Image (cartoon, rainbow, N blue to C red; front, top):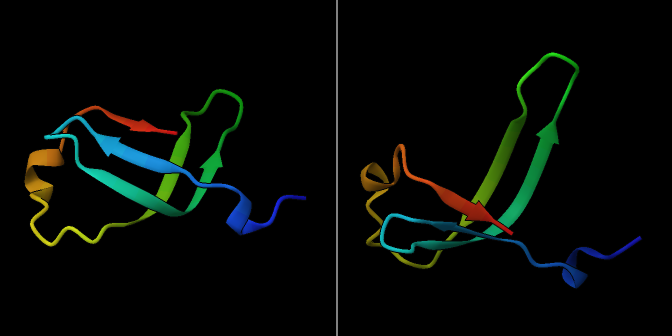
Length: 61
C-alpha cells in the first residue's frame, strides 16, 4: 500500500488557473446514482476569488 507521502494530487480551476493541493478526497458511486466527490483542498494563495470559481470547470489529477 502506498504511503500518503508517495502520492500527490492536484486540483486546478479553469478560473484563472487557480491550483490547490489535495489533502484528502473521497469518491462515492452507486448503481443508478450520480457520483459524489468530496475534496479537502489547500493553497498558500490568500487572494483566491472563490466566487469566480463557482460553476467553472476544473481538473483533478
